[in-house]
Amino acid sequence: MIGLTSLTESGSTRNPMNTSDTSATPSPDGLGVGQSHAKVILLGEHAVVYGKPAIAFPVHTLRLDASAELSGDGWRVETPFHQGHVRPEAEPTDELERLLSVTALRNTLDFLGERPAGISVLVKGFIPPARGLGSSAAVAGAIAQAVAGAYGHTLTRQELFELIQSVERVAHGTPSGLDAYATTEPAPVWFEQGAAHPLQLSAWPRLLVADTGVTGRTSEAVSRVRERYERTQAVVEGLLDEAATLTHGAEHDLRVGDHEALGEKMNRNHVILRELGVSSRALDTLVESATRAGALGAKLTGGGMGGCMIALVDSETESQVRASVIAAGARDVWAVPDLEVQT
Ligand code: MEV
Image (cartoon, rainbow, N blue to C red):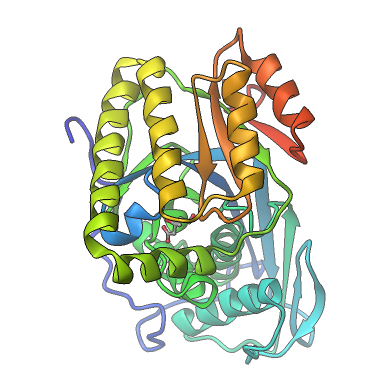
C-alpha cells in the first residue's frame, strides 16, 4: 500500500477490561458526548474476517450522537430502541440492542475503574439495526466516547477500538474490527488484519445504499461462511483470495479515479459473496435492478443474508438507479457521500 499511513495508535497498552489502569476523574460538569455513523463496505466483507483487506466508507447521513451525565440514581440508558433504568449486569437473554448499549456502558465504566451511583446515557439519531450498516459498533462507539467524556477522559483511537470490539464480540462473536474503525472514522478506510489506514481518493465515488428492509444478523452470516470454509476449504480459500485481489485493485481504482473498473470489481465481489452463501433473493433483486438501470457496479454490503446493497453511480445514472431499486422493493435509499454533509 503506497502513500498510506496507519490510523492505529500503538502507544496504548490499556485493556478495556482492566480496571486498575486509569486516572479518570469526572469532567467539571460530569457531562460527555460521543459521535459515530453508519458505514458501508465497498469491497472485502467476510474476506476481512480471514485476514484479507476490506475498504469501508462512512455514511454520514446515518449518524448517532450520545451524551452521558453523571447524575441521578441508578443507570439509565435511552436509545432509539429502548429507554429506562438498566441493571449494571445485563443478561444474555436481554434483547440484543439493549444488551449492546448496557455492555458498552458497563465496559467503559470498567475500563475507567468507575461504578457511579447515577449515570444517564442518551443516544439520539438512528442507524437501522441488522442491515450491515454497523449499527452495533456505532452505538458502542458513541456510548464509550460519551461515558469516558463524562469522566474527563478522551479515549485514544486504540482504546475506543478495543472498547467497541469488546461490545462487538457480544453481538458478532468474532468481529474483524472493521466496523469498530469504520463507524468512528470520518474518512474512508482500508482495513487489514486489525489495522486501519486512510485511503487516497482522486474523487469520492458516488454510492447509493438501498435497504431490502430484511434483517440479517452478521453473526449468522459469518457462521455460514465458516461452515462452508470447514466443508470446502480449498474452494472458499480461492474465493477469499480473489476478493482480496479485487480489494487491492479497487484501492488503485480509487486512487486514480477509475470508477468503471471499480464497478466491475464490485460486480464480481457480489458473485463471490453469493457463492459464499450470504446473498439473498431480495439482495440479488436490488443488485440486478441497479445494474439494469445503468449502475457502474452493485453488490451486497456488510454481513448479507438481508440488509443492504450498494450501487456505484454517476451523475447521469443516479436518478434512474434510485428509481429502479425503489421500484424493485428497496425500503430506503441513502446517498454516499451526502452532498450536504460532504463539501
Ligand atoms: C460486517 O460489517 C462485516 C463482516 O466482514 C464481519 C466482520 O468484518 O467482522 C461480515
